[in-house]
Length: 113
Image 1 (cartoon, one colour):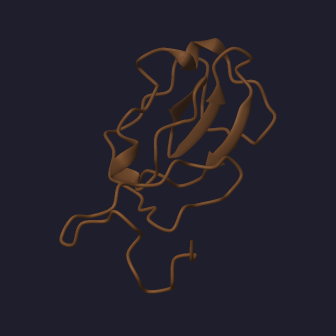
Image 2 (tube, helix red, strand yellow):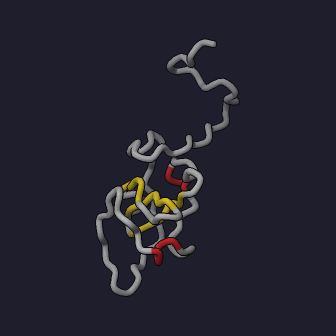
């Protein structure tokens, strides 16, 4: 089997239909189809303000509630989170968080404006 050639659509792609966003690979940085979106205003819970989270930190469990879990990831041009993970919105940023440990495995800064 030959590898796909540059400039050619992937095998199985139907002309005129956009390809679905690829599954997001943690640590890969912003995917090529990424585009920031205008999100509704974000309200920090009492006692919180903007913080620049980084990979490896533990996110407080408060942020693993439905108020912060972000499920419209296709609008950003990224795929679904890997099994066992959530996309979590924190202000203008999007965090990929492992459900059980609450550990941040990736961050997309400036995902929302």
